[in-house]
Every structure is written in C-alpha cells, then in structure tokens.
Amino acid sequence: MLKILKYSFFDLMRSRWSYVYFAFYLLLGIVLLFLNNDLSKAVITLMNVIIVLVPLIGTIFGVMYYYNSKEFTELLLAQPLKRTTIFLGQYLGVALSLSLSLVLGLGLPFVFYGLFKSNAIWDFSLLLITGSFLTFIFTALAFNIALSNENKIKGFGYAILLWLFLAVIYDGLFLMSIILFEDYPLDKMSLMGTLLNPIDLSRTLILLKLDISALLGYTGAVFKKFFGTDLGLIISFAALILWVILPVSRIMYKSKRKDF
Amino acid sequence: MVTIQNLHKKFAKNIVLSGIDLNIDSGGIFAVLGPNGSGKTTLIKAILGMVIPNKGDISVLGENIKQSSNYRNSIDYLPQIANFPSNLKVKELIKMIKDLRDRPSDDQRLIELFNLTPFLDKKLGTLSGGTKQKVNLVLTFMFDSPLIILDEPTTGLDPISLIRLKALINEEKSRGKTILITSHIMSFVEEVSDEIVFLLEGKIYFKGSIDELKKNTGQPDFEHAIASILTIDNA
Image (tube, each protein chain N blue to C red):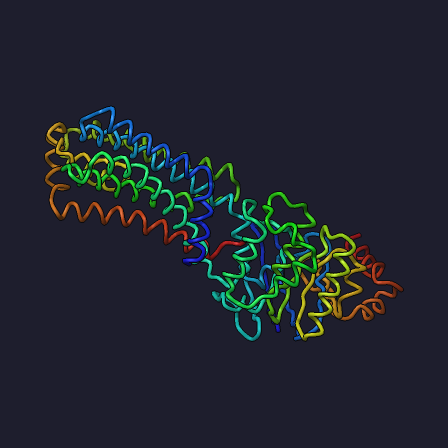
C-alpha cells in the first residue's frame, strides 16, 4: 500500500492545484495575522473559512482524482496488488496531500508570527486537527460517490450536493426542527444533531474551545457542559473518527465488488 | 494452466458470458476470437480478476483466483487500449511498474527492440497511439511470467514493429510459455496461434485447431471459415 500511497502522493504534489491550495492558505494566514492583530479573531475567521472550504475542496479533489486516475487504476489492477491496497493507497495519497497543504499553508505564517509563544496554540492546533479530519472525511465520501458512479457528471453532481447538504441545508433543517419543536426540551436532540454532522461538530468543538459559548445562551451552556468535559471531547473525536472509518470501510467493500 | 468452469457474467441486464467452460493447457498460443461484443475482453478481464463473475470458478496455475491477487505475479497482461496516466514520463512509468512488481526485468532489451529510447523522457500524454502501444508491449513483455495475455496486441503498430512483435511472441512460445491472444486481424491469428477458441453470444462455439475449423466449415481458408460461422448464426 505504501508504494501506491507514495505514487499518488507525489503525483498530486506535482500537480498545480496542490500549490494553488497551499498558496491560498498561506496568503489567508498571512493576511489574517499581519493585518489583524487580534489572534483569537483571526482564529475565528480561519475557522469560518476552514469549516466551509475544506469539505468542498476535499470532495471536489477526491472525485476529480478518482476519475482522472482511472487509467492508472486499471494499470494497477492487472498487477499483483490487492484491490483494497490500490484504493486505500490512492485515498490516503489524496487526503494526506490535501491535509499537508492545509497544515503547512496555515502553519507557516503562524510559526513566523510567533505562535509558540502565544497561548492561542491550542485553539490553533484544534483548528488544524479538525481541518485535517474534515479533509479525510470528505475525501472518503467523495471516493465513495465516485466508486458508485461511472458517469463523471453524475459523480460530480452528487459530490457537490453532498457538500451543500452537510454544509448548508443540514443547518437549515436543524434550525427549522428546533423552531418547530420549541415547546419541548431540545438540548439532547440538538446535541445529537450536532454530533451527526461532521461540519457542525467541528464548528462546535472550535467555538467552545474559544470560550465564547456564553454568547450562545442556554444551549451554549448545555453544549459547554457536554463538549467542555473530557468525556464530551472524547465522544466528539470518536464521532469524527467514526466519520472517517465508515466511508473508508465502504470504499473497501465497494472496491472488492466492482468490475473494471 | 487456466481452468474456467461454468462462468457467468452480466452487466446490468446485458448477459455477456453464459456458462463458459474452458481449459487452457500449458505451452502454446491460444487465440480467443469472436465478433464485437461476444465477451472476449470480459473473459480475459475475468481471468485477471478485474471483472468479478456472477457465477463460476476460475483457477490459474491450480489456484482459485477468488479474493486472491498473488497469482497475478505469474501473468503479464497487455490491455486493449493503452491508457496511461498522461502526466507521467515513459521512463517513470517503466520504473514504477518494475518497483511494484519487484522482480528482475528485461526492459532495456525491449526498449531497444521497439526503438523507444528517444521517447523515454517524453510524457505519455504526448505520445502517438502506436508509440503508446509499444510502451504497452515493453511493460507486458519485460517480466518473465508463465502466462501472457494479449488483448488486441497489433493495434496501431507499424509493419516493422508488427514483425518484431511476432518474433517476440514466437520466442516466448519456444520458452514454453502459455500465450492468450485476442485479435480481429485474422491473418495475424492464423500466423501465430496453435489453437483457437471462438466465442459467440457468451458461449464457446468452437475450440480446436485452425485446420479442424476449416474442415468443419468446409472452407478453404481461415478468414472465410470464420465468416461462415458468423453468417450461419447471425443471419
């Protein structure tokens, strides 16, 4: 698997888009830090960008890489390699190179800014960790969509729809359900709703870490009580890990049964 | 060498193979023939494990291939359409496949045989169809495996390369290898193959030597013998 991972990774590292993605984060990091002197505000702005952009890029890159490397995959399938090896290698290649662009692109300006001396380092690390999780989750989801759809256009369509659903529509439905059932106690339900969507989960994790939960009122207090504890943190990360494992196991299941 | 029992495969509602039983002995050149869409490529891909059969068993060198990948170490495969990652150089592709197989290879001799040296530093996307096919041939023949599968090996080749390819195939045969070929070029098949397998509508219609086929159909030459099968059944 390491060999496939290596080839996919270097293939992507040579592509122009990895540099564009890296340069974008580098620029964003520099602008936010050096034109804005409030570090925690910079982290919040970064969070808002990451929460929306990372899933989108992960989905699009995942789908695009799968369809573009079809020939490469067919070449590999005739070699003495297991199918799970081929597809997991490619998946990890994409997810790792995207995570690397994110971590280096944002990390470098922060290091130059003197992050290690500031107390925002934990907030910032959490930001990078959840960003990487989101990359792994959405790349895996994208590979699932691409494996199930021979038609490129359909695959792209479903991938964008998935992103739109989890990043925008889910929140809308969530909000509507809260308004609809406002006469009932909703804290448990909203906690569950947050845990079920990786984008919401990441956002909540970061917001609570930034200690602005007081702004969220009563629900904020409930959330703080849950996510602020060690158990809450463990459950949140377990949910994120589950969001990686489930789509990855479906990649393995699907790839074993597909005809090429 | 290869044993296929009761192989069935359909894509959605399209039945491609329906109950293939085939036994390919060691040594010699076998040609799989049939009209377009008769399931030649599907059969070959099933042997390679790229297509997963709905029913039936395939074993290569006595080993059932289900859920296995190691048996592909003893197969060299030439795909029908030479689709390669276009941003890779010829040199890098050869190196990569060598790295993946991790076995001694004969690439230098083949590169010289097909005059590929000037193309080694070119990207695969910029090569012509015929040159891609030559790269394809190098990748296939550079390892020393007992079973060689060639899907339309003559596509896009110039006459000189074609002669070299035939020599190469005969050389491998004389080393006791089993070679499985599909082709639409009947003169090529007649020249190289020892035995033919004729597929029609997902079943094996005929298996035997070319002389037997000529005798059965009462036609003096191979091309007409094949044509007579097709006109009798598909008229």
